[in-house]
Length: 367
Image: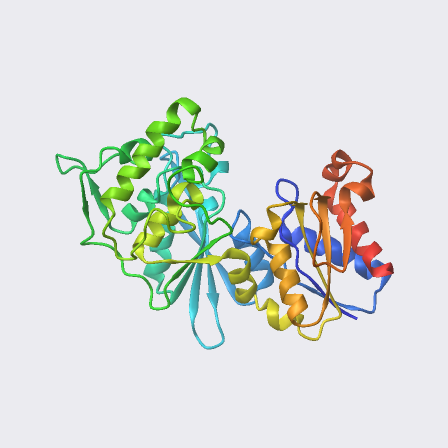
């Protein structure tokens, strides 16, 4: 048999590459003569760069020093992908530059995306032909203003001075100077996200994602007004972005800022699958194994396992799901293994997820 192993990360417990390796090890224990191909997946969230690097030959990690969301230096990296035809793509992961995990304490008013923009600028300066921008894991609600600043946009107050970085500073914007904006690469910039929320309103960046970034109920109104001020100031923008554009609310509104620059929104899982050549790998396979930490009602909205299953079906290949917890009907899969059921409890599976992933791979091989 030829088996493709393409799980997403098990958030908070194991990376996509580690889970893929564990599943493959379990399968090989039971069926050592089968061909097992590792293709760790991602959907634009944390770990996207690592997953793509593990699944793609010819990728190079490019170190870059940026300003973190707290204003202090951060050692980050972006990924250079060189295609056989000479095309060079730069993958920049927001979480590595401006992510929530970089903060010791939440900073809802001052956290920003300047570092994300600086990493994008580094990829542009290197001469990439195309950009992939993974938006998951944001620490801020600055609407991408920090990233735009790094790309040359000047957000000015009434006196003509630069407004402070962070959500609170957006309320002081009186003028915008686009004159020094860095141009998009020739092949454009694609935003990787599974979020279709608008910038503002009941489904917007503050209402839905603000609490995880530290925006309290008492501060939510001011934070929303600050993003609205940014939207008003950027009403005429190169990308034609509108606050109601699906995905504008991604990553604390960073989706809006990048759409204003001229980037386009894409399903993160679909774009990553294409980038690592997963559709071609699946053709002719006997089975695809995918998975994630928790398969729930949100999974159908563009998460990696559902995209992998779609690709498998389109090639007439069976697809099995492995998840730490299965909390929704796993429609579209030919087999399902829950690590929590194998381990006897959620706590037990979380205590050693790779052990139970190996066991899941072995169980699937024996079916």
